[in-house]
Image 1 (cartoon, rainbow, N blue to C red):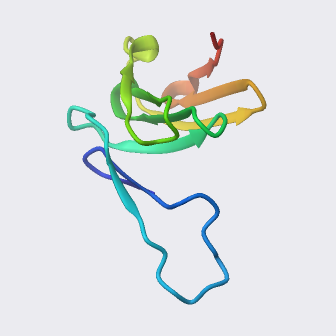
Image 2: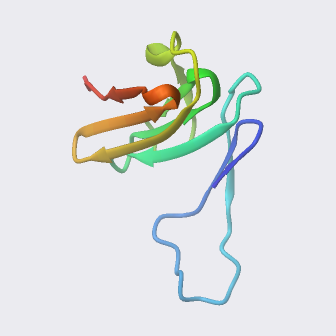
Length: 105
């Protein structure tokens, strides 16, 4: 779950969604500089991407434990609304028809 102000809340892997017990969330700080996180996607178990306002992108290499700013979309004048991965291919959809493709390393 993403919250305004750059905070994410994550659950443990594979929480029991059939249980009536409350699902515990762990807060993860993302230094967004005040821009909201709009969408989050997992590329794999370790690599997580978050996108948001003013072309902001953040990446975690430790499964969502910590995030760092990724400057690859820093010059895009608009918001990034959605991030999706299909295997190793990733895409980000932004305002004004911006579509970014993940090139990977």
